[in-house]
Image (cartoon, rainbow, N blue to C red; front, side):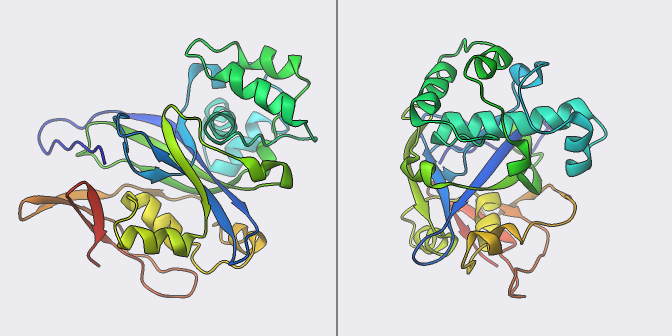
Length: 278
């Protein structure tokens, strides 16, 4: 996994970002869609994450068809900047489409339109979002996003984000969701409990925020149960990086899961992977 720390000097500035946990019903409980980042990607390279990315200037374009107003978006996120709050919802929806092929929209859209939109967003110089979605008669469904968490990258990391995590429900048309094949090289629908078990066996790599997030959904039997675990308001979480011997450790605030059990709070980074210590 790609990770860079600097324990000296001023911290790097944060960039706004958005991430989406898309859930579907599975035979062993609610499953979430995860993608494996390419090892060449500077941030979280090689790790399994949820679809997402930074807020782009295009996400702030006026006229993007959406079922949420800026003031409504601000109220949902507890944000004092309505334009940013709406743009974060748009970024979450755009990144979800780009990285998974899952389009969350206000009315049904055929698979051909979804592919066309995803292909149009792939080039670095993508067309204006407002014109793109208007041309295909698609209204994005920001209301389908349930605000869940806000994670701020530790000050010691050299690349930092202020990321809002959202939850969403997949529909049957999304069963064929898949990674983009560029920034992400693999993907899977997986129960949170199975993802954590695979990470403990070091079969996959989970960064501490992803690990903590999955812990909060372990045991969710249905998508309704998973979505019901969203808090009523977001509290920013900014982990701390310390050095334990010759390896960096990330320390998270103490918290308890849905079943009342204590969640992992301390993660050690060694040999390209994170291991929970407590």
